[in-house]
Amino acid sequence: MNEPTTARHWLAAALPKAAPGLATSTVLILARVWSVNGAEHSIGNAVLMTALALGAAAAGACAAVGRSGDGTLAGTAFAASGGLALAGVAGYADGLSLPLLLWALTTAVAYGLAARHWRTDRRGTVAYERQVSQGREEHAHLERIEAMRSRTQIEVAREASTYATALAEAMTARAALPGFDAAAVTRAGLPELPGRQQPTLDTP
Image (tube, rainbow, N blue to C red; front, side, top):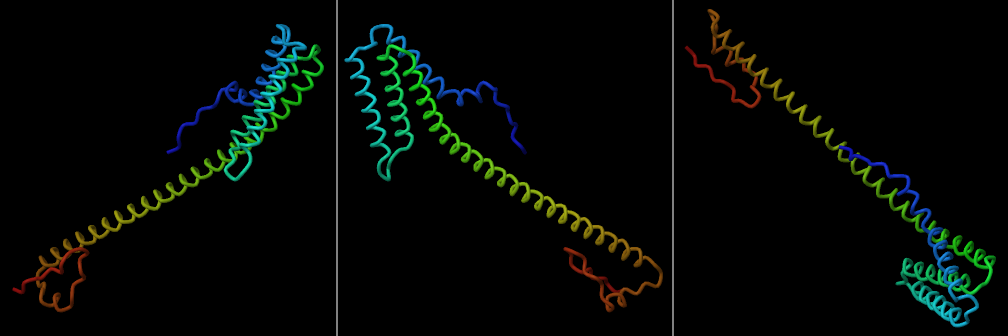
């Protein structure tokens, strides 16, 4: 039996696609608010954000190195590094040209990383759906075979029962006829009844 499918709301389907852009835009807006509140041309704040961005980038590089590297952790660390760099530049700069340029670059990189993850996830989903579909087809095929086998067995049993009943009625009717010689019938041989022993007729 097929499972009921529910259509996803368009907002739920579009939200993951808009997440990278929303994240970088939020960082840019918060950084500009931070700039207005004293971060503009602040060397200390710039040094702090630079150190945090470099630390996140180094953590991402360490997570990606080696056979046991974790791609998810590395991607998260690099995304944090880009966000910190964007926040530092947007908070330190006095204009919008450089922050907007860095925001565009960061958004493009974020969508590039997200697209790779989306492709992997989509391939996994398609493979799983294909496997489930094949399992359902095989199960349905086995069910059809078993149903056909059951119907065949029922028909064979019904025909055998009908044949045995008809044969018994014919033998009873013939035995009631005048001049019936049961010994001659026994010598000639009787057909075997399915699932029963051959009847033995007593000679008069």
